[in-house]
Image (tube, rainbow over all chains, first blue to last red; front, top):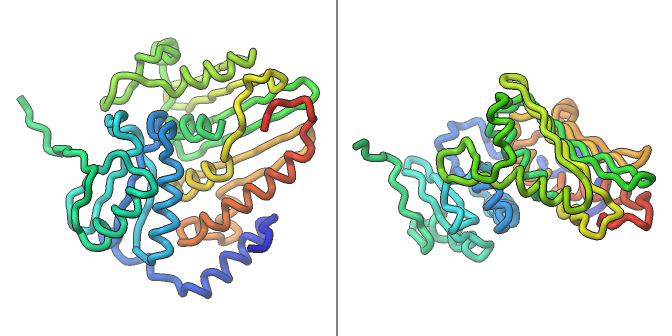
Length: 131
Length: 184
């Protein structure tokens, strides 16, 4: 890739890219997107959440899966960092622990694409029982 | 260092900040690097501010320790620098860490371009201003400016462009660094 030095370069590149991939209509309801939340607090960062996040951003893009990748704070599973919460359209969120790039690949291929559960799920009950 | 950048910014995001200013100010003559993150989030009251450096203090409910600030304090103090935090409830917070770059314990900068890209892409609604100043030269990035140029922060493929853009500019800037600096 040629050098990108100025904002104008950046803009030009983006326009080239826009023409190449033909904007996928992102205006549709956000429910239709796969939501990926990477835990990015001290614990997550220290265990390599950035690499995982870059991987998700890149790969989901390459495979043209409509998705939103965002960061979130600590979910309280510091022992299992990096953790990633994935919400498929119309489904409950699922938290995966010990995610590295190899695991991320599995998650994309099997969970996001086919909806099959893979290893490393942290059971999390979103409806806490009030005593 | 880039990890601290993400960590401290994450605090700002959690404080519902709409504007985040990240600044690195490196001065070769005095061998000082000032790393500063300012935001317009919720801020903290005096009591919270006092307990800030206590690693067992945190506002979060998911776990009982908060190591972000204490770790930052540790890394800058081990180079002979210091950390200051100014905050006012409702107005925002400024975290400033000073590193002595002539000390061998000074942290490597790390993948600043990568972290910054992720920060921008993951939070397109927050205005992020980034400045890296080395002596009298500087590199600036403002997400509002990107938007003015009609660069869409949400478009796929952007991270692949933004990261080399930042990395390239920083690399050029770093040529001007004095040799005695331990920063890398």
